[in-house]
Length: 291
Image 1 (cartoon, one colour):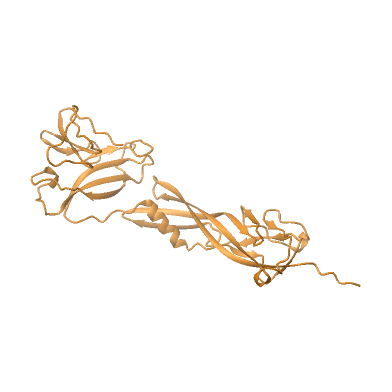
Image 2 (cartoon, one colour):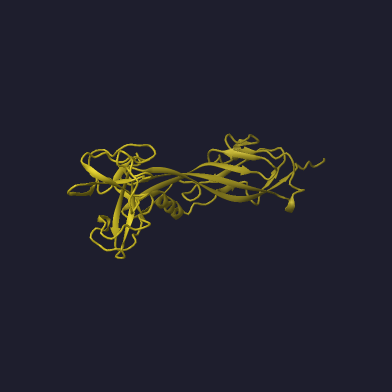
């Protein structure tokens, strides 16, 4: 919640979010009831802020003020004041009602991890083209990666497997099916870079069981014999003969973990994407040939 800025020798704080355009009710401290943001107005001076421009400053969810140095970059939103200020109000900046409009402007820092916020009013001749939220840019970057479901190497669609014999599960790795995959997106002077990588694959085997693998699995080699996979495998206990089409129908679902950050430091975040690939398995019994 933003607090009014206490400024000695200043008069009449103007509410930005809950503004009254007639005669506002005042508390003993000179603050308008129900106001959530303020511009200080002092005799002989325009409404101003101590550091970064007209309006009031406040903390985001985690609090904190930017470190000393150049002003940080901001993502700003504009909301038309309703009703608009009366004719002659300083908020019109010398313009007349009907000539553009007065907006409530809220800016959130994209470089301060503390979520620094500035509230103010602004006259604009035309509705503004709003800046894009970094999280939106992160999603655009992810969409451009064309992430796909697991590239299943085993089980093979043309393979035949045996009841009671360990099956090895593994996937082929590429930037679009396993990662890492990197991409960026930019707008409004802000650039976001994102990196995606699969964190796990859940195999639904079609027989009512599932297997969760934290890695791509280990490829089977002939020298492994009948041993089970060291990290990603399954064992069917019944044939697929009674299943539709005579096969078990399963899915491999990959979970992509995406880390993103505003280029140059500041805001960061994480996204999760899910992709899926189907597979079928034909499972039979060992055929013993009599002598």
